[in-house]
Length: 386
Ligand SMILES: Cc1ncc(COP(=O)(O)O)c(C=O)c1O
Image (tube, rainbow, N blue to C red; front, side):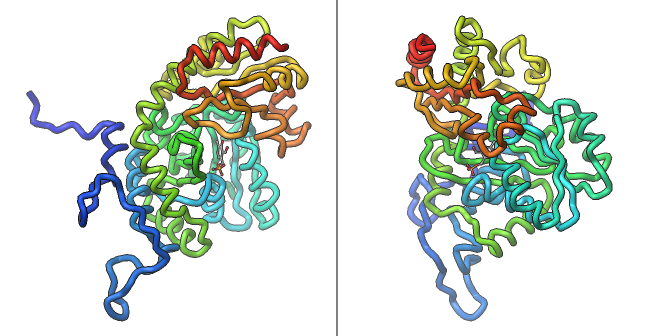
């Protein structure tokens, strides 16, 4: 037997890193430090905490935990996924250029085009499923490549190894929004990313009861800049919401296994259903990037999109769902079903949606962890309305 101790597995890290029992009382669950300030012993002497916008012990625990789950050196949490993305973009300067995937969550290009473009940042949007498009879009001012993989809602993958090799060669940072897969199924830093961002609102918290965002870093100067932005701009995550995520991540591994098993099941069911015209899911053998999905991810996840043929068909079925809840968001224990054209991707406008292939008949489902038979029955009876 080897003497070498293996490092702790994912589920163990999720439950124990940053989740140590309280040193004062032995409480197994981390305390929520609901305080705005900290008493100081004398001028300039304190226990490492001065003011809660700058730091908070519950937040420190969460940041340690999320860095360990993504394999980063540090993590900084923010009041929402958009606040985390905003903080990352704030590290750039006027004149800098960012190459982005052309099918990001709708709120991300809204922030880039309708806020930051006015401050002199430039953004190009390309189909990153072909790494050559990324290379062609780089110029001397490019500082960052920002991708989501798989994309929302069309489930198109970016080859992270290939794109990160280009970024390293051209000295450009690769930032990956890993919200859809969670660190359980995809580890972008191990594949070469310089930074990972999440809407913790989704799988990391997992219970649809709080908003949050995190940026996971690989270099000390990134963490320093983001910590400075927490202090300077103040979009920090409250201690209660930090605690909710600390609680949520303890079950991330078991939740993701069920999300994935049920996701595969629902995708198979939909692809064999006569009312469904097309299914977008990287775990189906007919997905054009099925092989890449198997190499790059350790599961296929819970997100599936499917084509009903028209807005009227989509509406007919969405009015009938009972177990699935019609609403925005994803990644909760409950099955959420949504209509990208009028919800998550409304901000793109008709032309923008058409350009990337989001139709009015497209429906997206985030498969929850209810009994899968109930989800299938519900979809079947709702599709009968078409
Ligand atoms: C992939 C992705 N990134 C970022 C966000 C934004 O996160 P939040 O809603 O927590 O601000 C979302 C929200 O749906 C998302 O789906």
